[in-house]
Image (cartoon, one colour):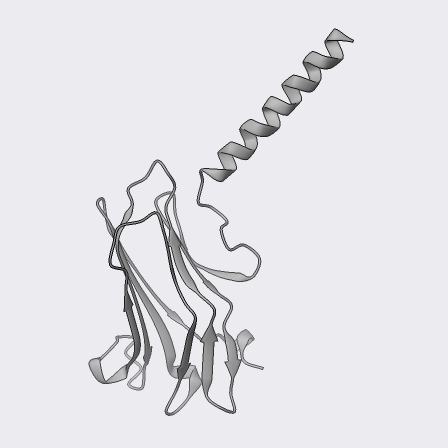
Length: 152
């Protein structure tokens, strides 16, 4: 009986240790219904899968987020820009910007959303740009909001 109790306690301790380890990491947040834009040991950037309406030329995102693990520096700056890349240079020119959001404070987990953007020409020109900075380094991610598999 005593050996069974010791084994059960050891098993419970192992499970709790594993769960606590999972809670302190950032890898995999938003898993399943999200798009991984950047994943590293320092920061993970994800967004919800886009909802595309080609008839209305709109793209909706429920959220865009970044997260760092507890043992890493916090996110000091997080900027999101959505733009209509009419000239095809993958740069957010002032006249192309549709949405611009900036986080006002340092944090381990930052979420922007929801977003709905409309293109004047083609939804295939819509792009997202995230600029993120921690005390150790910066990261920039530029991506197509409408990937071919997202267009019905």
